Image (cartoon, rainbow, N blue to C red; front, side, top):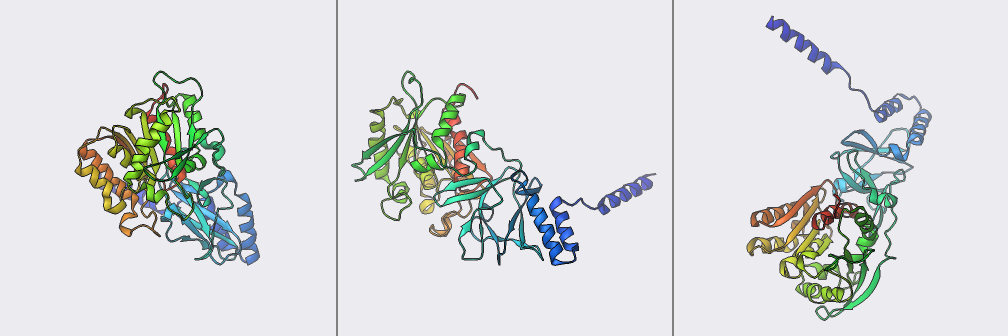
Length: 413
């Protein structure tokens, strides 16, 4: 009897293995083109397939972790350059024989959100994906967005998904001179509507100020976070470094590279300047400094150096591997400070700044994992998170929300 059962099980398993896996619509299209007799027939099939693609059906997802991208045009070669390949070598598309259609197939986690460009040949300029209406911004312009099926778009950014900038129009503008640095900074200040609470508002200080305004749409985000009750009403100070997008010095790199003069400017000049003009709560636990990349580095350095002023720091994709892990060593080798930290990084940040940073320091994902380990061993009050995203403003704007809710939770979840 046992032998008969085993034979039946083996027969069923063999039958299952012999069943053909159902082809996706795209693979059925490829099969049809392969069977077509003439080039004209192949091209006609390609034209019909391309015309069938709509914003709601593109990029193509044969399953939750596979994506297919398409390009149509007379090009010698087409590549996809983006987070999926750490912005190093493009994933070159395959041309469908007998047509002017190119495609590439890739894999990513179901909740991933990646940004990319198309390139045409090795030395060509980049271009957004003409089929994809979803775009993000950075200092170089527009990028196309690949959001996998499990990625949850935040409703706050619905109007910005086509690539428009956030506006600084509602912000108050100041110029502040710095004796510590020897030059001035432009500030943009967000003040929530309504009367200030007893004791004043908490204050968020952001590095790369105008970038957080334009590319992360933080003022508009704060309006909605506060109105929904997700965070307390707060003041936000956007601090823009000199020579923004220019090659001159000083700049964000000279300021954010663990520069102690910049720390003095922030703690001894900027904070008193703001608190003399706005109803700010005057305590370390009500002050948060935040930034991305190089700005994430300095935002973890400032509270460490001046915990009596800044009780909170948020490092988004921080360049914590700077100068051979100098910041990480500082946290490991010095007594624990009474500060709270929010540290996050993308899992697609393994080769950041490869054209200008030391090769040993470009893996931001691993650098932040080392930082996480040190913070945990030292007993810090902190949150560490990784997201299947790249070194992008689309990543930082979405997850700054998580940090603000953690630091300054409102009355509603």
